[in-house]
Length: 95
Length: 392
Image (tube, rainbow over all chains, first blue to last red; front, side):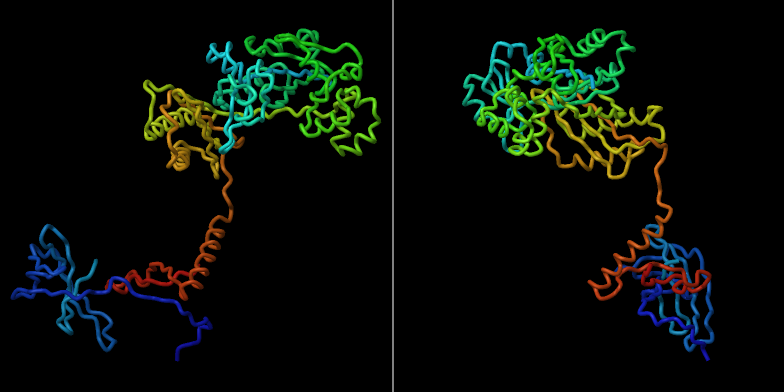
């Protein structure tokens, strides 16, 4: 049982920031991004600077399991994208 | 109370003559703007029928050949305040009674100067000779004023007879009262101060009230109103002359910035604050341009002062080509610092809280948010910070 904290219920508003944004990505045979569609334009990935995996909240119905890629696209713009390993969907997120 | 009245009759006209000696041969009316009206400030002594306070139309109707001249009040005031400062070097009690009139307290100064004559001579020397000052010495301000009126230019006069006898022949027109009351005195057949003094105080007071009592006392040669010494305020002034007259406000700002830099670099301005700035400029072929800027919060540095001055001059049309500019910082604080509120943070929160409550009422919800760290250590980026409603 959760104890009553005694606090009055608040009409306050909480919204988490930096939510992942859907993005289209084409990948190579190793699973690394080749091109990313940003603002309607396909941009070629010039290099992948870093990659890492997150596995967390395994106790939830939808555990967090992501493969992150820190990429440099045209004109040296850095973009971080990840693939949700559960849904295989790609997202963009600020680091 | 031993008083000297220093009277410079027609001061504005005399200053204009110094500027343009050709005016000596002509009759001139010096007019000042009051909104849309143009009022006479002074006139040539030969324009007998023109009085200060008349409208220009009335004055020109009385004196058709007179030349109207726009008053340069700033320069008249400047000249007169220099004279007051010089008088202040001679006596610690100097009261300015208006442009061209001052009262100087003489009590207790005889031992310092040796004799009253020497002191009066020094007072005469305090005023440039071309202004032809008249000095009157007596007991009380009003008799001293009458004595000054009797003295010739550059001379002093001290009545020798009893004051009641001395003031008796003077017209009631010399009384420092409203013109309407003077007219009423004449209508009662009271044309001289002697005629007023002959009556008992009761009827005069019954007719004119409180002013009546004052009139009666003055008619007896009694004036016990105290001398109110003018406050000597510390000011910091700097000025510069332009190589060529400037017409752009941006050039003016550069000059003001330069003058502020000079003032704040002075050792006596270290850690001090000013509440007022005054700008004065000579305008080509026009009266002196003057602008006063009040600082809501005292300013203690150049950039702060420049910011406020710039803001107050924004949209102000230049009066014409400026030949020079002087900047005075006044109302200087005596302390070397500025009081900060101990509870500044609390007050700011209270004010913010009030503003947010008003927004809640007007919009039905709190529209102010803040970014708060929720789980800054989280590996999942969207868990680290959140947007929450702000309630101080």
